[in-house]
Length: 269
Image (cartoon, rainbow, N blue to C red):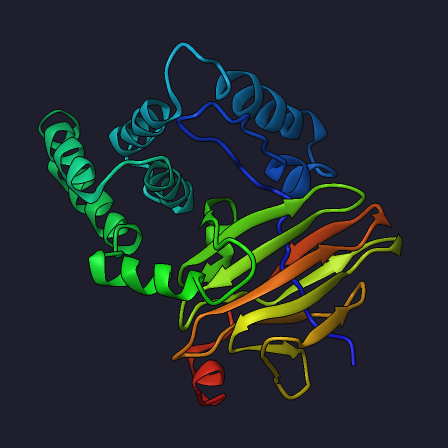
C-alpha cells in the first residue's frame, strides 16, 4: 500500500538567535511559470533582505504585517506573516497593541480584518501550550515551530521540525487535533514521491477514491509520484510523522482543494 507524506520543501527558518532564513516557496510554486520572479522572492526578498542583520527578525515580522495591513491586504499572505510573527516571538498582547495603534493611522476596518485573521493565529493559551508540551514528551522528535510557509494549505495548526537536509530532506510534522492538509500530488518526471512514518498520536492518510488508513506510531506509508492524497490528525488526537522527501527529477508539489468537513467528520475519532 502506498500512502502519503508531508509536502514542505519551502521552510522559512529564522529566529532571534540569527539562524539563517531559507525560503524556497517561490521556486516550489512559481519556479517553472515565472523563474525570475521566483528567484527574486527566494534569493533577494527572503534571502538577502530578510537575512540583513541591521534589524532583528521579530522587528521585520512586525514591520511586514503592519505594511500589509496598511494596504488592506488581508489574504493568505497576511496570515502567513502573522504566523511568522508569532513564531518569532510576537505575543498576542503585542499583536493587539500594534494593530490597535496602527488602526488610528491606517483605518479601523483594516484593523477589524487583521484582528479576525489574528484570532486564527493567536489561539494558543496557557492550557493549549501545556497540552503541546505534554504531547512533545511522548514523541522522540521535536515538535518544532508553527508551519507558516504552508499554512494556506492546512486546515488547523501544524508544526515543522527539520531533522536533516542530506542526502534528502527529512522533517517531523506535527498536527494539532483536527488539523489536516489539503489534497495534493507529488509530481516528478523520474523518481519523487514521499515516505511517511508515524511517530506519535493518531491520524489519517487517504488516497483519492480509496478508504482512509489510520496513522499510529510505526505506520509506514509510501506515496508514489502522481497520487492525489491528504493526511492529518484525528479529531481528538495530536499526530506526528516523519516526512522523507524522495529525490526525483523535476520534482514539484501541486496543492489542490481542502478535505471537506463532511468527509473528515465521517472518519470518526
